[in-house]
Image (cartoon, rainbow, N blue to C red; front, side, top):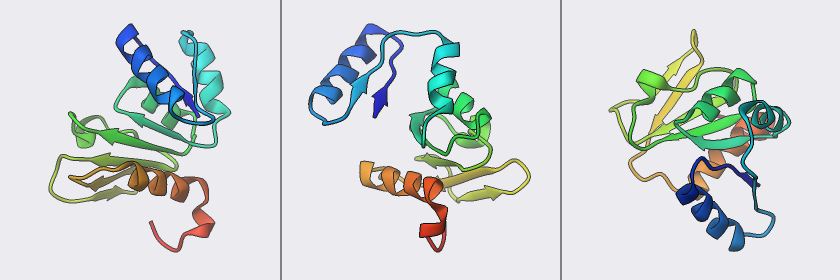
Length: 129
């Protein structure tokens, strides 16, 4: 697991997470081209509503994007094997034209996020989405 960060506060939080987790590494500060190279090699990505989530979608890397303060219907990551978990909205969405898939969940937990990512990475192992 590799953690990115954009400022010192995020770096400190990432370092705390990495210190308490086996196999978790904080990436050094790097430019977008290098980050894109790393993302393109990933098996899957869990992210939040940032440009990196949209870059992941553009690279067709399976991902779950978490929306806590924004609506994925406005800015959701669309594409192959992308899935949005949101606290906003009243009903799920599955738009076959744009690839936007949204599940509304007021109680987003780490195990649920992991489960959804596993469905993106290993779809043949799951009977439904």
